[in-house]
Length: 234
Length: 252
Image 1 (cartoon, rainbow over the protein chains, first blue to last red):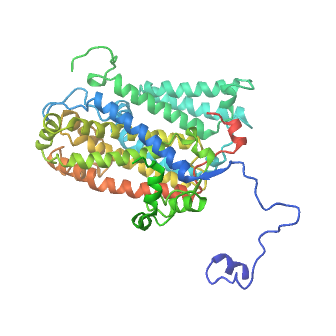
Image 2: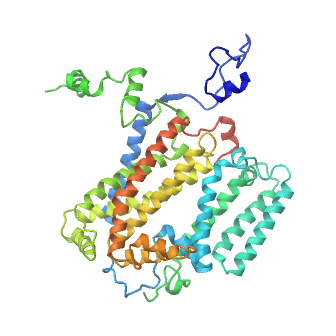
Image 3: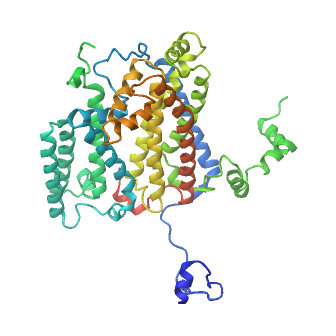
């Protein structure tokens, strides 16, 4: 009875009935050893650094603004469709997806799933613990991941979505290399310490960058493949 | 005449006016340095002390601070641009021409705003990925990660609504392509698109709606969530800093 009263927080009897929380005996230190290093005063240490960073940014932006002009095309004309009509660069990955998948999948389903996935990252224990993927049961885990990857690649191949296939396969190869490697140092050893969340995020970023670059520089009329240095009719 | 600058400052600090504003002596003790931070409305969301490690450039590359500064630069240049802008077709396009050929430094003003916008999208993405790889989303920072995702969305919408405002071919077709995607939503797609555009095509109503979103609603949302975001950094115990042990195994 007493217990529940205290834990509920309301009408707590804690003041009348103090509970012992911790023993501090003669030979133990109450101070926890802090490995995160010393602290400095925000004023001036942080503020001076922020001011320097801000100044560098402003100077850089002013310099670029002096030598590069914001684009301005002809007056908007609903009757004259440019080919290709492109969204801003940060949506060109999505537009590249639209080229492969039905509008609902590329424009609604995938962005919504990505958004949900981003939001829930910190609420899954596996992402918080961050244990290396290639630690215990490495063989079985690599098998599962590769199974998923092969299934995904087959699905992507059905849709001809090769600008996703390339980065997906590349990250999978990286995982295999790390698994096979017996190196005790170097980047392959570092890869072996990476958790599942690292592999998923790295795959996501690689794919997003690949799609955005292809959409920005390598897509021409009818969303066909063009070389950025080539000439094509506008 | 030959009064050293320090002496001038010392004298200034002794005046009644200075004391009435800052209510503290010179910041030469840790006590007054603390007051300098938590006694100042514009700094009080910062912790009074920071870890030496979190000050290192590689800790966060100051990406969050840079994104905040970009937001401030964009508000300032954006308000200045508003003096020259009519959210109507085709006046909006004529205003762009005026900025180029009539307004003093109009080109420079628009360039700053444009570059700032692209850079902010880039930095916010980079910031998010960097925080992820540093493990900055882990408890007790979970909720601030979610606030960060909201800020990413607000940033993208801010940039996208601003994209339409010049009312040139680039703006018109980029927004047409983007808003066509909304139609793919099952059941309510075309209705949502109608609300977003104020019609069935990207026209004058869409321009006005995007303008109001761009200069009022989204900046206020950004302001609100940026406040929460920075405040929570302090409340959750500062930037995520790795212990020496973790640093050894995790060199990125």
